[in-house]
Image (cartoon, rainbow, N blue to C red; front, side):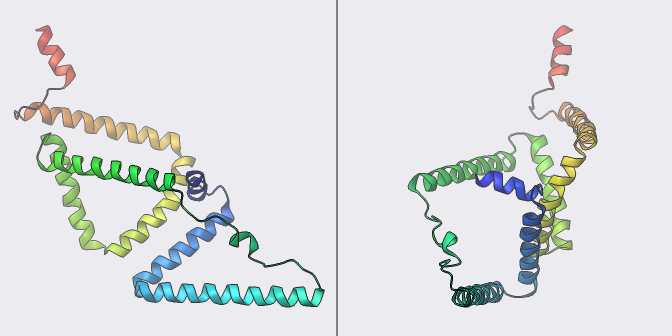
Amino acid sequence: MSSRIFESLIYWRDVKMSGIVFGAGLITLVAISCFSVISVFAYLSLLTLIGTVAFRIYKSVTQAVQKTNDGHPFKEYLELDLTLSQEKVQHIAGVAVAHINGFTAELRRLFLVEDIIDSIKFGVILWVFTYIGAWFNGMTLVILAFVSLFTLPKVYENNKQSIDTYLDLVRNKLTEITDKIRVALPIGNKKPVAAAESEKDK
């Protein structure tokens, strides 16, 4: 259920709802980059509280004038079940542990050079990150990631065929270069399948 809601937001299935979430999130992140997290949280909570109190008073006055009995204006939300079941918590914990274990194993493999090509790729990525870190601070990267989350999926969906074509070209080129490097580095790495078969035929 939650995954469908998330997908609906980032793919702008409901433009109004996605716009509200995107605008509110972007304003919050920009505010956090300018002020402390505590101040932003306090001000946003205060504004929300003022809005709900004002709406509650307005509805009470309206019901009194019109002599209606519609009940509490937030009754629907007050009756929502927000509790987490034990099964749900265990499922989330299991997924989190699986991801952590996989991430740890991958880092060990890269840092201890199980495959030199993969470790070199990892080193290049880290080198690029040193420049990204020099250009942007952490909060700026979070804002860029948030904006990308609400833009790139939709751009990809609208241009999927052409983007996949270019991605396949880049992937094939990288694979070709990687195979050549593997052959050139005699450090005990496995040879590409094509090269191994050709040697076997000889």
